[in-house]
Image (cartoon, rainbow, N blue to C red; front, side, top):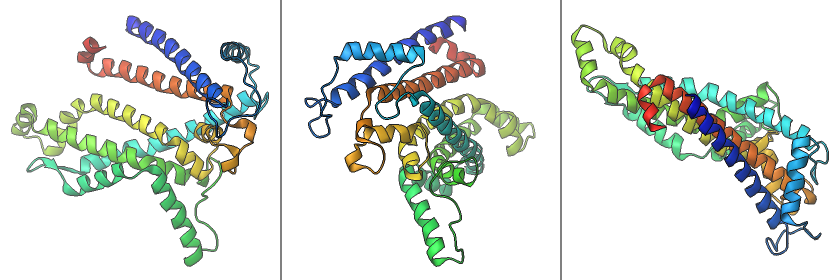
Length: 312
């Protein structure tokens, strides 16, 4: 395990440097007239490598600044990371238990298979982007105010808070992950229920529920960890659009405000467009999140299933 963690740690460091440098290079070149003739900055760009070295030195010293946020950038970044973490945790707390319960409810025992309603529900959930679901949710809130008996909106559609502001973005962000978890739980459970050891357990007098809980689910937990990891990647991938839609001040919205020019957006200042320190730092943070998550998942799998050791 120690050797495994040492290799992973080295890989994380190399990947973080590559992600940071790649983000910085992209933003740096895209702000020049040659790299981006439509939205390029009028001022001349500094040489690439010296600019990146200064960025790394300032980041290490804790004095990193940006064109848009100045010397408060690290504070803004910390607040955005905290807001995104809250939203991610809330979405996971909804999608994991709900998907697990739906997956088990969608298992047909005799004959063994997945129920049709679950197949239809998960297919629709996986095919529907979170941004579209969020747009429908916002429209529904407005329709209820205009045509319903309420004189004010039921749930906030913009803003931040660990209160009612969290409900809509968390629910919207959890739709596709819930469908994915439910589909995999049902499929994996059905696969285990058809194996001989479950038949033997049933022959000893165990009910379907007892055979599922005591035997089948034990072999579902390890692959379920991998499914949850893929689910988390899906949530992070949709974070930018969901945070932008609901005005949630997280890393997704911070990155979106940096990628969209001020002349075509109601947010930000022109100088904040593709600010290299902002882009490089956010890209590195997202890469760090994925890399740490993959390491934790791999270590967890090695603990749950010793057969995974020879695959790492």
